[in-house]
Amino acid sequence: MSKKTSNKTSLLSPYNFDVEWNDLMDNEDFIKIFLSDVLEYYIIKQRWYGGKASKLKYIELAEYFRIQQNEEVYYGLILEVNFKEAFYQHYFLPIAFVSDPDFAQDNRILPISIKGQEGFIIDAINLEAFRKLVFERILSAVPNDKTRVQYHKSLLFDNCHYESSRFMGMEQSNTSIVYNEKYVLKFFRRIYADKNPDYEMSRFLSEKKEFKNTPAYLGSINITDADNVQITIALMQQLVPNQGDAWEYMLKELHKVFLTIETKSVKLSNLPKVEDFSRLELRDVPPQIIDWAGLNIITKVQTLAKRTAEMHIALGSEFEDTGFTPERFNGDYTVWLKNRMLYQFQNRLNTIENNLHKLDGLALELAEDFLENKNIIRKRFVNFDWTRLKGERLRVHGDYHLGQVLVKDDDFYILDFEGEPESTIRDRKVKQPPLKDVAGMFRSFHYAIYATIFNNAALYKKEQEELFQYAEILYQYLIGVFLGTYIVEIQNANINIGYHQERIFLLKYSLLEKAVYELGYELNSRPRWAVIPLKGISNIINH
Image 1: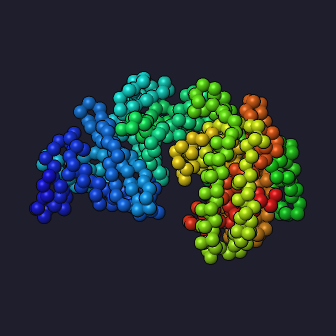
Image 2 (image 1 turned 60 degrees about the vertical axis):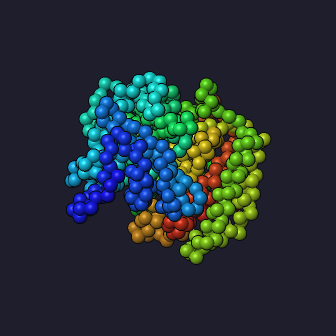
Image 3 (image 1 turned 120 degrees about the horizontal axis):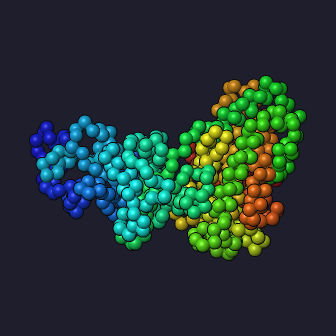
């Protein structure tokens, strides 16, 4: 390797390697230069990089493999990013060499000259030729691929050819490519030494159970690493034409509901309250509530409950694949759960003590209550007695909320089965009570209602405190209607989620777990919203 000296070329290409592109990854000088500050500087600017809150120490090349078709070769790199706080993360980065000086100006990683040809190393996903190659490799995948880079396709992915590709848009942790305006290939950027839960769940639900309300599984790329572990690199699914996600949809619907308070002069004192966790059919919802909230939001919640139940029925009806067979509660699960919850609770306790100065009004009042009741909350987490539970645990979505659901006409499609971002890959695959997903959706309803109040405060005539009272009444009806539909569907399919008291215990436990989890995020990034999880925690421990 020689360093260039000419001023003109040194700006463009300071590094010259006298090796072919096909042998570049075996060149120690290249690896050393590539993994130094050059790659660090590039990675920390990427949206998908999840280590921004930590101090990067150094990057190592954990694995590399070829992504190729005939003579066309790209490299897939698994990078191990080591942090000064003594932990590491793995990332997937495919690379290409381009010589066109006008190309990919914002995505250059390293100016380089290979065998005298000037150019740049770039993230290959920016190159249409690479995207086309990946599409064609999945399309031409053979059954039981035993090579190191394993391409797989489902029977549904057939009779087509490459037409076009484009980036899907504003994603954070992954990069998705839309092909032919019909298919989506999600490249996983943060990589784990195991099959990705999104790949496992999508393939299981779509291929094995033919669950219709999730994007159909079409194909995938997995690699076998040096330890013989399979790692998921990419997942191909059907593109579901949609009107956006259920979070945005609910915000619009809830805004109408809150505007109606004025237009219909809805008095708080005239709204009948409902007991926590009541199971409601449409006929159980009082006319005053229907007159205020409208029928649309109630019937939509019923549809979402039905689709959620159908997902759990598909996940709970497997008796061959041990990764998906239902299991009883036991001591091992309880130890895992309690350790996890106590660690998370202590973390949030420290966060709230350090951030109390950022809070005021109701949020401060609720935060002080939280600190005062910390022993009661801790005891709630410790009091998980598995011997009294008769229901079963299943593989669940794990990070279920309105943002993980697409709205299509009058129906809902469930996606993104990667699991909770803070959890390890192993924890994401632990079988859980399906009511944990239900609790996740209930917390999302609570968020949507309060977000509507925060986002539109200037448009509503009532004081915020009074709007919060309307919010709590509406919330109880929405979760009651959801439970009314969900439990009937689940029981009709003989999925065992336990007896009545057990269900309430599991729901409260999971709601408390979710709200405590949310608290850390809100205190660190938008303290004004900390009132939402704090109110959720207060509702549970005071009822």
